[in-house]
Length: 195
Image 1: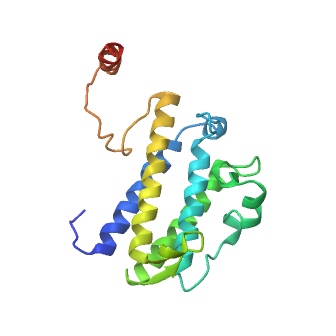
Image 2: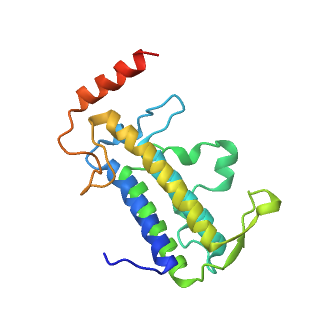
C-alpha cells in the first residue's frame, strides 16, 4: 500500500485495520466459543463485534445526511433501557454469521459517509456532556478508531486464552518469531515472584 498524506484516507485506513484485527479473532471458533463469557463482566468475542457495529453506526449516523439504511441491524434504544448490556452479547437468535454480516453493512455505510464528507463536518452527540457535544467528523473518526482498537485488543487477549492465537493480523502477528513462550512466561513469573 502506497503511503498517503490525505488525512481522511489515513484515518480510514487505521479504522479498517482495527476492524479486521477484531474480526479475525472470530475465525475458526464455534458459536459457543464466540459467545462464552471470558471475563467476570461477561466480555465475549461476538459481543465485542456487535458492540462496535452499534458504536460505528451510532456515531457516523450523526454526521450522515441519510440515516443508517438497515436499522434492523442495530440495537434499538428502547432495548438498551431494558437491558443496558444488550449490545455486548449476541442473543440466541443472532448467529455469528448474522452479527458479522451486520457489522460489514455498518462498515460499508461508515466508509461511504467518511469518503463523502469533509472532515470538518460537525454533528451533535446527544449522549456527551453539553460542553463538548458538538464534534467534527475528524474527531468522530479518531474516537471510533480508538474504540474499535480498544476492543480489538480485548478480543486478542480473549482469543489467546481460547487457543493461543494472538497477534495483530492474520498475515502478521507482530510477535517475535520462534519465541519460547512458556520460557518467557516463566521468566516473567520469576521476576513477579521477587515482589
